[in-house]
Image 1: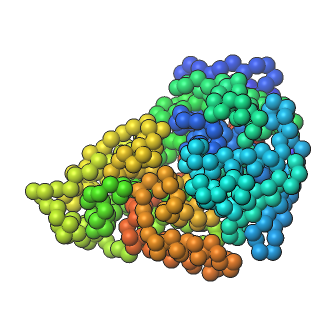
Image 2 (image 1 turned 90 degrees about the horizontal axis):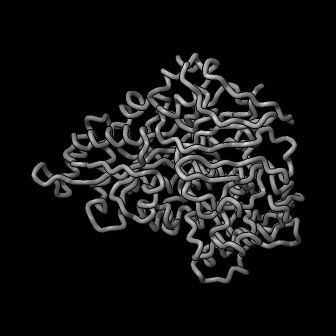
Image 3 (image 1 turned 60 degrees about the vertical axis):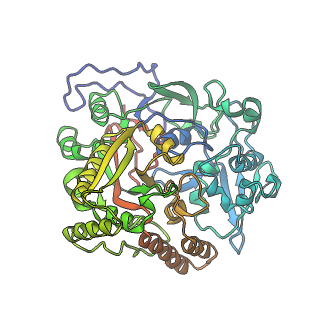
Length: 533
């Protein structure tokens, strides 16, 4: 078990010899303070309304579920100290520890039941409600076809939660550490409604408590003395900063203003290894960078020939090896290598063709769809206001120009871009999907017809849905994996989206930080971190 260590301010001279003045908040004497660059400004800290990784980084330090992320990203007991499963895999019984919300009120099984009913309430409009469809009658409750009381979640007593599932889910312990399965404080939400997440009102059961939120500046949290394992939480205070300018963030880490930043400009890896040895922490991720077509509205993107041409026309090898240069791999499928419970093999049918041949074929497909030099296909690519996103979209724009497509780029702040994706206010969008849990369903479930807002392109396929449903009902792991692979192949044959590359986690971590363990899911809970004296 880790014991608290005294923190020290990290001088600029100690960080690669940088001579710039360090602008670092004063840390109270005898306390450990962490300055944390977190990529973008959160839109919300409500676990049932958030959907961005940068939000989950903070929320996961404020609230914990039945399980939580161990240092290596695997599921570890949290609110649940133990659990058992029925022989048919449909009933899970979780035994809860004695724990309290940060205001002193006990956390009970009823808080979990309340949370699952709330996330499925159509008024909550949760983008992650589809994950809780796993519970018996979850989808029916979300659609208003069944009462909340019929949901497969029961508090047998204050310390025993029973979940009844629609189908077996061997990944339940993984899913239980996701924010969609977090408890929420019923007594606070019933008092304040959606405003419960504001500083001064926010109540969590995690290792840290919300202190303040200054938009555009920082979110500050402090150690929660009521957390059951508070004695072994080293850090006393964390400031989370939005850091969309990755070069600036890199320099702030080098100067000692930040201890961590959750991203770096991918083509600066070699420079950092030279100037800041030991700081850059690249690691292959369970994540895929991809583009989606808005097929919600009638138009050329509903034509499979057009979608295939646009996908074939992208030079993934150039993007990964010449442009990004941090170990990313070209993607010709959606589910990344290394995903558990899967039979890899699904692949875009044209993937092995040389790029030059793909360009010729793409031009021919566009001509068949009615586009030519005199009548070119015109599209807008909507992307996030981040350096890597612009690098990617400019490369795609050039590749599409080579096959006769005129593409413009519209950059927005991350939260605004994703709001546009949710509202279908785009033609082509760029994004990355990071696994919510280590199973192919975290990727493939995204494209189900009933997923809702996060199926940004509104991909629809009865055959695809049927294969996923059949996989859900299949108790044999190997047969389930084969069904999931067939489903992915069906979607790829439909050109349902454009996989671009498999992502590399790119964190910058001061070597003085201890407890940081590289893992493919890229979850790093601050309760495990400390700073060397």
